[in-house]
Length: 163
Ligand SMILES: NC(=O)c1ccc[n+]([C@@H]2O[C@H](COP(=O)([O-])OP(=O)(O)OC[C@H]3O[C@@H](n4cnc5c(N)ncnc54)[C@H](OP(=O)(O)O)[C@@H]3O)[C@@H](O)[C@H]2O)c1
Image (cartoon, rainbow, N blue to C red; front, side, top):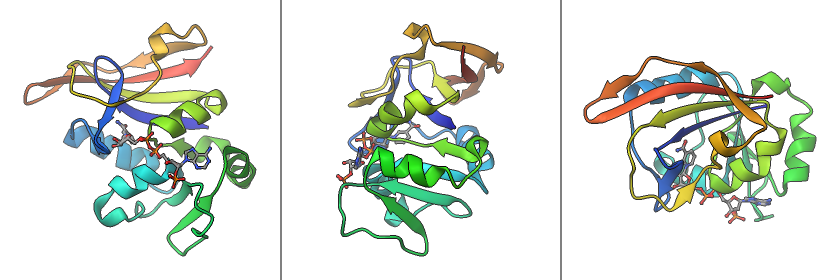
C-alpha cells in the first residue's frame, strides 16, 4: 500500500480542514497517480473536498466512526482501521493510496511501503502534520525530482520507501 501527501518544510499538511497550498502540477500528479485506483481517506478529508463529494474515477474508501454512514454508490464507508484493512484485501496492494488526513496517515503509515511526498520548501501556518520521515530510520528517499517553482513556492517530488 502507498500513501501520497503534500507537506511543507515542517511536514505541515493542513490548516482549518484545508490544504496549505494548491500547486497545479502537484494536483495533476495526484490526479494522475490515483485515477483508477483505490483512495483511503478520513471523513474530514472527504468533507474538505468540493461539495463533500468523493473523487471521480477512483474507488473512495472513507473511514468514520459514524455507523449511520453506509456504502453508497460513490463511496464505501468503513468504521475502523481493522475493517478497512479487511476490505483492502479485495484490492491489489499496489493500487491502494492513503490520501489523508493526518489521523489516517498516522494510523495507516505502518502498512505503507511507499510514500509519494511533494515537499514545498516553505513554512505555512499549519494545525495538522505528517510524521517526519527524515527522522524515521525505517524510511529512505529513493527518488527525488528536480526542484520546481510555482510563484513563490519551491517544491520537489520525493519517493520514500521502507528500507
Ligand atoms: N497535504 C495533504 O496532502 C493532505 C491530504 C489530505 C488531507 N489534508 C489535510 O488534513 C486535514 C484533515 O486531517 P485530520 O486528521 O483532521 O482528519 P482526517 O484524518 O481526514 O479525518 C478524521 C476523521 O476520520 C475518522 N477516523 C479516523 N480514524 C478513525 C478510526 N480509527 N475509526 C473510525 N473513524 C476514524 C473520524 O471521522 P468521524 O469524526 O466521522 O468519526 C475522524 O474525525 C485537513 O486540513 C486536510 O486539508 C492534507
